[in-house]
Image (cartoon, rainbow, N blue to C red; front, side):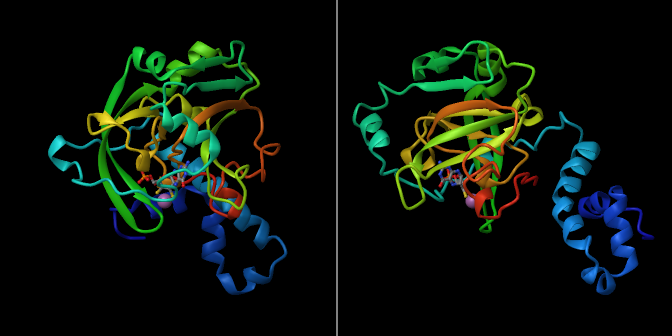
Length: 257
Ligand SMILES: Nc1nc2c(c(=O)[nH]1)N[C@H]1C(S)=C(S)[C@@H](COP(=O)(O)O)O[C@H]1N2
Ligand SMILES: [Mo]
């Protein structure tokens, strides 16, 4: 590469020596090599580690100005959950809503919306990128996930945060949406449990009453309709074992932008 200006993808590829060697060696012969599939399977892990190395664990996603906010923040996936649990919560305008925080924590919590709103908040204007090819800029207000985790006192064995949602995209009501992130993203300053969009309570279509914003990852990681947060040591025991509703269908778990 002669150009001094590297794209981020080139940098990521360069920084992963295994993948770099593979690319230089030419693909035809390698496609038949028995280890090739295994290396491909680990390429996602390489991207994840390379991105962390290059961008740093604490690097911030870009934030925008008020004037950049999209006039309409469209909805994707579930836009109106039709599960029994959600119908009941919506009936009373979320007065009975409680966020349950459990798993590997010393102090399991149940938090009402009032309790969440009473905690120090953070507001950020960020761009949401969906794999289906659309983006939107929104102003999100919520409580940093780190504050909630600190209240619950995360135990040393915990490595991932799992978000359980109230909507089902599957064939049964039990097949609810879920997502997960690691603790690096969980404690990142821009990772918030958002309750407001553009200065108003979240509309149902955008995840009322509480949704995740984890700004360095793609749209499907931004879990809506969160009712439970679970700290775990491994994702293998949860549902399909891949860490999320779409991940269980083959999407990548680390969806870095
Ligand atoms: N609970 C839940 N969260 C979800 C989804 C969903 O269907 N259910 N869809 C995901 C996808 S693919 C995207 S792009 C965003 C869409 O968020 P929006 O509806 O606010 O645009 O939510 C993500 N989080
Ligand atoms: Mo998406």
